[in-house]
Length: 483
Image 1 (cartoon, rainbow, N blue to C red):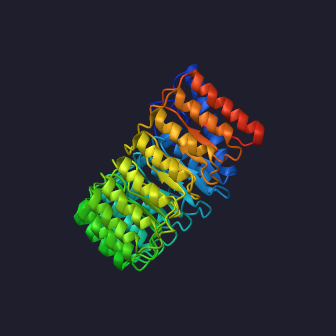
Image 2 (spheres, rainbow, N blue to C red; image 1 turned 135 degrees about the horizontal axis):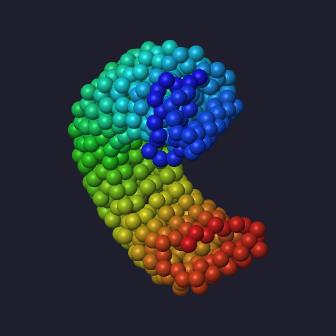
Image 3 (spheres, rainbow, N blue to C red; image 1 turned 60 degrees about the vertical axis):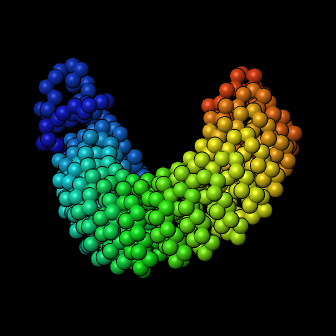
């Protein structure tokens, strides 16, 4: 199959010219054309040979896609194909016409990072109207706007195979959100909807809320970075409270949500019997908002993962959260990084986690805890039996804080496997203390130790390397240490 589209060189990399008469240069030009054909033939062979094929970033453009689409037409093998970031435009999408309609093997199609725009999406939706195979469609960063969202919404009303739809980082506004919300009322098979980094706003959230009320299939809703604000989150929580399905994941990070919005989120947390994963990262709920979430968590027994990073939470707010963890054995992942909780905040958290809760991953990076805070954590680690991953990056621990932690590493801790101490102004003395602790503990379980972006010289690095080798010689346990 040859394309009638005029050949053009991509911005970078190889020149994908293969149509007869399109390359008039002799010598070097002919060589490039031969190499292009060979590469495209290799890609086509991959499409015919493997179940999962990643052809992202090859920059073969529209004409390359026309050439490759023939392989998909006769596809009996490829189930997952990525054509992401290839300079494909709306014209190139036409290559799928007559191909995807008959392809029942392909389950995942990734066209992210190609500027196909609304016209390309409309064309794709017309083609997919007669496709019953594709279950996951990725259209992130494809310049899709409201018209494209409208076309996708119309497809969803009749499509019963699509389970995952990714539309992150596009230009979908309130109107597009309204169209998609209408589709949610009629579609009963879509499971995951990704709309991060669009322009939904409060009105878009309000529209989605109405769609959610009548939808039973949605399991994941990703709305990170849509400026929905307190008004939008209020409407959204009301819609989710009436949602007949079992939502397990909700991402509303970076949405200008304050304590007022957190109150409404708390109301939903108390009611939900299905939510497992909640992201409120990079909002501004503060101590008051953290209190609302903490109160709600006392009544929730489903959420296992919660991200409250970057919310201007201080010691007061994290103390409230710590209280909620006392009788909670469900939450295993807690992110409170990028909050100025200070030593007092980490003290309250540490006191609870000594003997309570079931936290396995604790993220406390950029929390201003200092050496004093490290002392509280070190004391907690002597008793805690659940924390496996501990992130303490950028807390100004310095040598003193590293020494406190080293003391607890000498004690048998059967849980901790990963410790991140990057960006902590630790010098050689701190490294010496940690290396001695690793050598002293025959039953050390730490397998990953990050000390990158500190102030270690070759002496500190050498001491840690020696400790790593010693541990391996004595117990055959491998510790990955990063400088």
